[in-house]
Length: 361
View 1 (cartoon, rainbow, N blue to C red):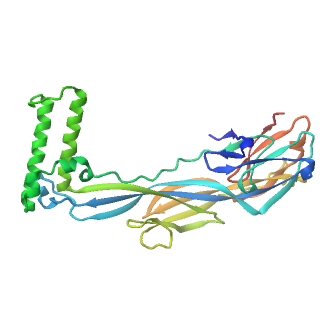
View 2: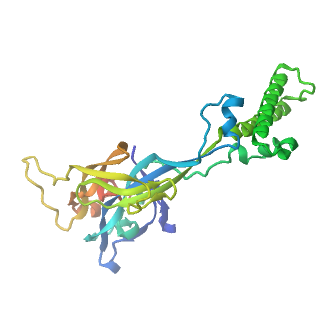
């Protein structure tokens, strides 16, 4: 659902769900000859890529995994792989220098306009602004410690293991310790341990420590796997349709990179125009003329944005685009009427008229 949110003009700063932008209130007065200059936007498409990277490392005793623990597929070689975890498509407006307008609003009611960054119009005769639903943007996540990077991993290394020069012997000792830990867990669960923890909290602490030690020992045979993510946003201002344009690459070693970095696999962007904005018509089907001195707004078109990689579709979304639309206008008298002035909310991503209603006097 789309809604309006009120901004505090006194601070001249508002933060919406889409972006943080400066906003200022410009009142049509004699000092500025009742004129306000503004710029309609062109729509930029933001593609936010969340890539996941997986690092695998063999354990010290991987050659003995099958013999002692019946693990037939231990990690035997170090590797680093990359994949796309998610893609988020969103839009925002940037000023279009070819669509600058001056509107005259002469009235004793002191009509005003709220302008955002780049003089993009946000509202007329109201301090509320249009707020579209925006998708949540993921945050980058660092890799957590592997079982071999914990305190428990240091606890399980016995003096006998340290003194042995034979990897086969150390593997045998590690496997024996795994089975000893499992027996200790069973004794605690069945109440047969010689020293039982005094309460539930102590029991959990002991069980957690046994689990961590076992995981560390198991990792010495099976190997370790850790994952982390990177997030990066690529912005494009489309002019017409786009067919499989490379907008980024995903490299296992370099992360999310620019299109010209050939170290990774490509991520493709396609934008297909679905509709174009059309001028409004009267009951007879005749095109309505632009109102004299009208306040310009955009009637946007619509396009389908698709992101693919490795032959798979990662995201698809239909978005409104100002550049696929046309510019029309509302008569200034709508906003300067002494008895029933109206307010207008602009969509800052397209410059469209998002909401119109009676202004509060």
